[in-house]
Image (cartoon, rainbow, N blue to C red):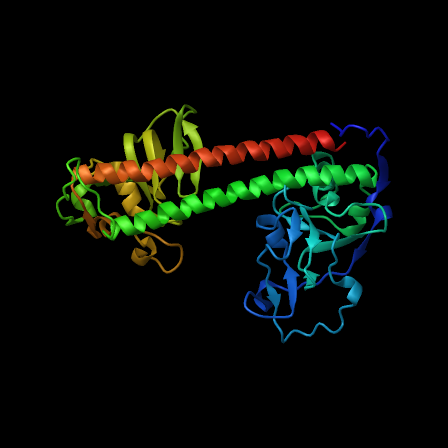
Length: 389
């Protein structure tokens, strides 16, 4: 896939012929902070988890190096410049080793490339700023980087092995076209993420207001519902234990743990609406499910609901500070008896229905926006595959 008017063959060169590697530091998280400093630092973990492909320092949250750290020995040429590429040189996951960002905007701030990173600087007149951010995300280049990775449990790559990788790129004008086009898609993806974040904030705020009874609903005649009543969780539902699933053949019933979906089996512990609560590990992320389900022994499921609607209980459970009821000093854990004794307030069934309907509409909107985000991300992946050879 190429833009009209461009027919010139792309150039192929070794990365080491068009880029030079600079010295990076090995500062750990312990000497970084988010409050104050003069020099900021790129940690490899942030490349893996949060920084955008085209790094704009005004739009990213980047830690400072503590001011008591002596940086006198660091030469000026080893400070990041716009157009530099920073690679994460280590990962436990093959898909992440050598993951990179391009420094698009520094806003006159001082920035260093830190622990487990490689800093590559393009040589003059080869690249349009922003182009390499996408080039190094393309399947072709990513596969070459992965093939150069070494190690068993932890995979790594060094400047020498990266230098031998061949990259193929067009002239500057075509690079400009590609960069502008993909940047627009990236901007749309970022906008979509913001839409989702705003909706998630909205539903969280609504839950907080509703369950503090600062927002009340009225019946179909415009009259107030009855006052909420205090109950113990164990008075309105029962809690079931998860079990080991490894003896079960594959099937269509989802198995969930505290980390989410695990696999599919041919049997179920419960069939119907349920709200799952972590027994051990992640205890503060209630999950709603409807239909057959199997849970492992780190996840409780609820059933036999009395005077309450399961989906309403799901929203209510999201307002509980579950960590307050943690019973362990190490890995967080909850017991049935502890959960059953927690006191909550619930309204009448009819008000529960209205609350559930209202919050479910926001939830459906969030799911719809997430589906749109998935399509944009698929589109970007497809274009990266088609545009780079």
